[in-house]
Length: 229
Image (cartoon, rainbow, N blue to C red):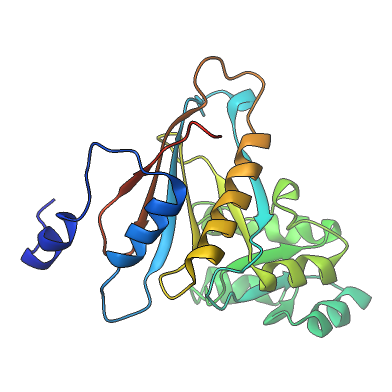
């Protein structure tokens, strides 16, 4: 991948071989986020898992104490009293069967997270081929299949993020924005890492954390020293 002159100048600030302590990595990732917009700070966690085996899969969710810095649009599939609950909790969209053709035929995907009550999963299942590949399918492990729609929506709006392995056994998640104070980014990052470590599958042998890298949307990757974890 070719990088421009500006990126190359920024990248000179980063020692590609070094593993930085968390505080130093966060300070550096903020310095290298120089785009004209508020860049997202992401963590890229390479694991020793083999996602081809079900017992080594990782999927869960965690509420970042300082939020993500972005507005998350929530769609809730519900019926009966749960519709009012979801609306009162601040869900952006609430509905049932009538949303199926809108998503299937019109390609409507103006939402970031989908929550569903268990009795609506038969309906939502019809959207599996669309929502699944985009990582939008509700899942009990992520807390997005639940009867407590109020808590689900509140948590998501407060900064709940979902983490899962990709096909290369790496977890990619946002930990905040470049405009965040270093302390807030550090708190978010540590909360995320605690959750990831607790989610370690017992079937994984050997080294679990292969590497952890922080980067901004347009900036270079900065390796984090994982010894403390």
